[in-house]
Structures are given as C-alpha cells and as structure tokens.
Length: 320
Length: 267
Image (cartoon, rainbow over the protein chains, first blue to last red):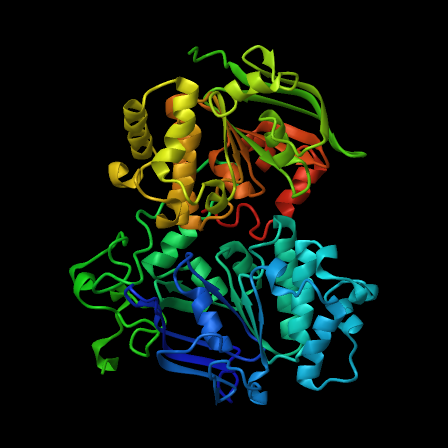
C-alpha cells in the first residue's frame, strides 16, 4: 500500500529475544517475529499481555539484545544500547513509554528534558516551547516540573521529548494505557498526526484494539512471541483470518445496548518458557486440526505471510 | 425472593460529597436492585468512583457527605464506624480496578479469602478453608485446593481479578460494587470476567453496581444504566434505551465519541 520503493523503514526479521533469569528456564518472549514499518506509516501491534509486544519494541529501540534475527532501521542494524554514545544513525528511533509518571525525570523542568532531545538532533533553531505548542500545551509550561501535570499532559510532554530528536521511527509502547479514558483517544490521535506529519513511521503498541483501529494503517497481531496476522487495518477488521484474531475481535463488547455478552476465549496465554508444540495457539483454538498439534505454521515468514495458520496454508507450489 | 416486584437492595438519595471547598458530588440518586447489574458510566472525574467509595465509607480523609445511602433500612452515611465495619466486606463488598494492587502481595490466597470470612461469619479455620476452595471453584480458578496456598504473583491478571471477586463474595454480600473491574485486563480476559459477573448476579441475586467508562462493557452486562457528569446523574434508564435513544445530549456525545460508531459492527 504505502510501501515505498526504497524498502521499509523498519524491518524486523525472525527476531528472537530471550529473558534469562538464573535458576529459571529461558523465556523466549519474542520467538521469531517479523514486522515491517514504512516511513509515514502507522502500524498497530496488538495482542494480549505477555505476548511479547513490549519486548519487541524494546529490542527495536536497542534496550534489549536480540538472541537471533535481524532488526534494521533505515538499513542500519540496531545494536543494543550501551554506555557509549549512540550511533547517530540510530537516534532516529525514539520511544514513548507506557507510564508517564516514571518516564519523566521528576527533578528536572520539562523544558530541559525536551531540550535533551533537541540537542540529540543538533537542532538549535527550535525551542522546547515550540514543541510544547505542537503537542497542544501552552508555551509557558516549559518552566514547570512533571508533578505539576496530569497523566495526559505528561504523556504529551513525553511525546514532545521524543519528537524533539527528529525521529524517523517513533515507537509507542502502550503509551495510552496509563491514561484516563477520555485522554486515550486524544493522545493516540496526537501521536499519529505528529508522526505522519513529520514523515516518520510509527509503531504503536497497545492492547486496546478500538484505539488501534482508529489510528493504524496496518495492524499486526501477536500471540506468544509470534506475529500471527498482518494486514491493512480495515481488511483485518472486516475479515479476520487467523482464529486468534477472530477471537480477539469477537471479545470486544459493542455498545449497541443489545446486552450481548462478548465471546470468551477459553484458557490463558501459555507460559512462554514452555510453549505448546506445533501451532502456539492450538490449545485454545476452536478450529484446531491434527496438523496444528504437530507442526508449526511459520508466522511472518514468506511461506505463511500474512496469516500464520494451517487453515490458510499457501499453495504447495510456493513452498520451499 | 419475589420475582415480580423488584426489591431495592441499596438506595442512594441526594448524595453530596465535598472535599475541602470543592463539592464533588451534587446530589446523586441511584437504586440498586437484587439480581440486576446497574451500570454507572461517565468520563473520568465525573464522580463515578466517589459514588462507589461513599457507599463503603471509603472516601478520602476530610471529605464531608450529606444525603442518604439506605441499605437494609439503615443509613450507611450516618452509621458509627463500628457498625459500618459489620456491613463493609460482609453485606456490601467491592472489587477494585487493578488486581495487581488490590490483593496483598505477601499473603497467600487462602489468608486473603478467609480472614474477613472468619471475622464476619465467626467460622473456624477448617470451615473457612472449605468455603474458600468452593469460592475459587465458583469463580473458575483451576485447581482451587492448590491455588489456596499460592501467592497473587503466581497468577495472571485475569485470574487475580477472579480471586479479587472471590474475596468480595466470601461473606455472601447482597451488594457488590465493581469499580472498573475489567479496565486493567485484556479484552479476551475481560469477556470471561463479564460473563462471570453476570452469572454471579443471576445465580446469587446480587445487586451489582458496575462502574465503568467503557460503554461496550456497559452494553454487555448492565440492566440499568446511569450516566454521570460533573457529579450529577444526568440520565438513568434501561440499557437498551439509554444506549440506543439517549435523552440527554451528554449521553449522545459520549456515544458519538466512541472510536467504533455503534451499529457498525452489528451485522
């Protein structure tokens, strides 16, 4: 759709991220996920909590090392963040974190924190007040401290700080889940508008499907460390193909006043340290077949894109 | 229980709450009926949670109240603390938004389920334990006996909220106040909790006050819906009417503000 000829801005291929805790089995939070974000495109990454969405985002940002697979931003491989100065090519990746109560430094004025971003980009023309204005806050707020603001305002400041660094890729890791309901849609729209306006890609992670539907061009559904379905938002919404996507959408209660209880997806997300054999979704899948218990449809790979499910197995001719 | 004439389990009349110089609730009227779910909708800051907290006498320190909250023929607002303690947790129970913080992280599930049960019902340790296992089975926790010995962190968010509901149900309450019980949960888990709440309400004849900002959740489980704005109930009525043909312009604007326009998803 909006894919430019130069290739995607962010390209994640078969990414594996592992959490190691002494005395516990290794947890593969991300187990071979692939994802692409083009410049100027908004991709919504959805899934239940514990499916590895945030870990994927942190790996893209360099906050987590990858155990296998590749992450490239604008052709540059992403290396884990260390003590040394960040490669200037990678300062274009900026993140807005979940909790604006802990992501801003409480002891520094917000203007100074936004100025950090400007310094990163080598921008001397813009002042922090300009950025506050862009996120819809009065210019005079630059001299205040984070505790003087509400959650929604703080998240706007965090967005201003991320934008100050002139990002080519903006990542929002559940940026709205800590906010009040009335502020959620506003902040999500603001992020979309500002990212698209500046030509940056936006990877928007949320478990709130209704907001993702509102702002995302494309949607990627993640389950237990794998991307199981990707597609244009409207298409996925109108015709979800993976049984998990269907279950996820069916669980959203609709405000029609009919009193219909949403469909329940039985069971819990399995322990990522001990994923089920075969398709990872098979113990909860209503349409499970024999093949699902034995062999895994390789999600995100060329063979099974865009739906990692045996129900949507591609023609054998295209297989390896 | 009489089926035809509905019994008012709890009535709130002209409830006013002020903290400092600011009046937060300006006369709220609500009636909860046994076996019915009453939904309380509204934006954040409209006073939904305050209404729920006022019923249990859990308002912030220094707040002043007036009006009446009638439960079992008595006014909860004017009740001495000792008397109120006999009602709280026993007859009127509450489920909070975040199960990660509403359960005590260092006490076993058994302790959290039986402590108030033994106090209010005056039963022995063994009986309390049996009841607790039964409650966990009722809220569909797999392996209730083993679950009793575990700690909250060993459960997922949805399971924790189920445990929190079991804690609230331990003393056979007549009124359950659920303050955003599914907001912190995933949609798939939310669906399970909503089904559970609806089932408990139908089976046990509980009167449920469901505080939520999510009109979808409201539409799924509530029988009656009240909409709050700036400390006042602006509209009350049966679910179907309030959500389909709202009288008040504010309800209309709430519905219009939804990301998914109503009716678009319905076939």
